[in-house]
Image (cartoon, rainbow, N blue to C red; front, side, top):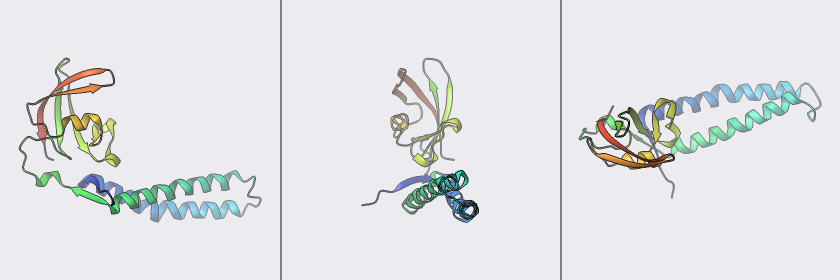
Length: 159
């Protein structure tokens, strides 16, 4: 049985565009680079050839992985849900650290979309798992690497 990979609408679009670029632009460019390096002769000591083959290997692996995940994806459009203040996949959650009063906003996304620099947290992360199912105004305890943290959910948006 194949498992489904959850994606937000934006995340699915972004990865579909990446896959299209890899197949239509990057793959032909690498094939051309290999052909050009091959034309230089002795392949054993041809650094350009080996670099191009390594790049091709990486590209093919990424293409295969994206193909698999996108073909087994489940796009969840959180904007279609009525906002009842419950933290679900795709929700944008604003929390406040109960100790420091520091406020942060995260979106709960699929694994391929996770990006901590942009406050996108994987639904499979322990932090997101602690939040999912909770409601606005709930308190959430989370065992962080630097110790137990308590947060209050102050807002939940489906955007």
